[in-house]
Length: 264
Ligand code: 3PY
Ligand code: MG
Image (tube, rainbow, N blue to C red):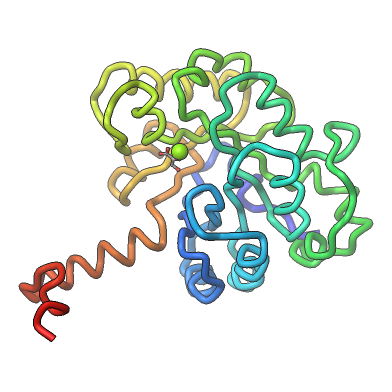
């Protein structure tokens, strides 16, 4: 069975850079997979991805040597079981605000004796280059489980959440976190409760021997967060990168949004 290089890197204390996939498109996923990112996360929470488009995208991602991950739409057994059964190497679980919610994520993700994931599915074993029997034996050691802290309630309960056995890391959603603090959604700010929360997440993760991570909008912020000690770092999304480059080209040509359509 293939080793999950992302989980191994995080366990060794190294940073791991990837990006979000927001276009529910297997062709885009295939093309993104060969660029050198450690992992690609299909975002089922905030995009049009469904189980079918995720499973098709995984085929391309696996070919490119990237780890195929999914952010599930919500922390439910059905979501987590189905993305793992179609071949995810790991799950990112949004909005985990309490110990009970974190324990539920572990139960959904891990097979007996750690959790109660049901046995079944066809695509998990081939996506790890193995047979089902080996997959069932080794999945608990290879599947990456990352819980998201993105609400003030999660920050309040950090110790209770991050001490749950069976999780590999914690990932900060800075936009939701700002929103829960009554601030405008943003990837970064100098708002003191936000800055303190990031430090608390990093230090609490370290205390419990798990990796911390965060979503950033660009490479400069990715490097800065890695230098601070964050390890699981998501740099924007394929859609964000496409639009940023397109905007740059449009501006360089002196065009304005809607200008071309209005003329012709
Ligand atoms: C957030 O910023 O809220 C996120 O969920 C980023 O992935
Ligand atoms: Mg969020």
